[in-house]
Image 1 (tube, helix red, strand yellow):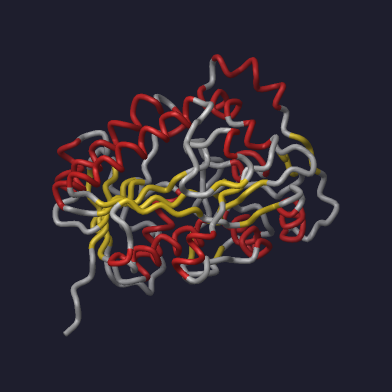
Image 2: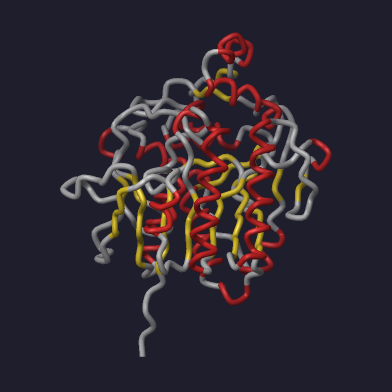
Amino acid sequence: MATAPKTALILGANGGIGRAVMNELIGQGWHIRALVRALPDISAAPPVSPQHARPIDWIEGDALNKHDVLRAAENVDVIIHAVNPPGYRNWSTYVLPMLDNSIAAAIANRARIVLPGTVYNYGPDVFPDIDENAPQNPKTRKGTIRTIMERRLENACTKGARVLILRAGDFFGPTAKNNWFSQGLIKPGKPVKTIIYPGAKNTGHQWAYLPDVAETICRLLACENQLDNFARFHFGGHWDASGTDMINAIRTACNNPALPVRRFPWWLIKPATLFVPFLREIDEMKYLWRQPVRLNNSRLRTFLGEEPHTPLEQAVKTTLAAFNCLPKHMHTAKSANSGDTYPPFPGPVQPGQ
């Protein structure tokens, strides 16, 4: 007798990580509900590949409205909490209330919350190699909020919720709109003429390819009976030990080994941080580019046996194609893991996560 498919509620289905996890879950046979502020045009290209026949249950609502979240989460097994305010506008005001609404829904339905985590929780006292149990002593406002989020999630586990946190480095991928790769290194919608690199010379940096992150989350959810109520893992992704691997992968994807590289103008954005929230957040995070900071994925590899891993050159080429940064005949990008086709983004996007 076949078992009924599990149901996941996606908060942030229009964002990079939410969309990637949604695609992967559908491929694994999950039923999907997606809470969005505006219902999509169903006549437009779907966000998942046509071979997946199970429809998405789109629900109009707001992650800041507790009633909307509770209504959407009724009888779900998992809540993917991948929602963030766009452009860092009122980030500190909105983030915790949105999380509290997901927590209330998880407790009411005895569901598991999945939170895509970051390295922001940690301070220099645990650099450069960080495991899941390292003390969290952040030195930034955003890191402090991230730490509070995790504490609230841990407390929710005493009230009937369950939690899965997968912390990762800087996201990039065909659905990843708001990140260093798509907002810094390259310009969406244009052929790559110059690479703008934020890191210090010969300094390692950690990258996380979103289809691999999404597959990892799905593999972990498939092991529900083996997960702790408050489960935390670190995703290794791509460790660029010298800061040159990502640059060379972009050059290879563009078939131009002579692509010039410019350093990110940190000095230039400082005066604008008083007026532009996004630039203020960028400036606060620059310490992560001036020293090697690496999340240790030993626990994840032990638990799963391996970590999903798309070769860097393939991941970068897929990402650049999705952002219309390659010749026209290469503009349709395929996910290396799921086979899903992602339509290209229509142009520059606004920073958000």
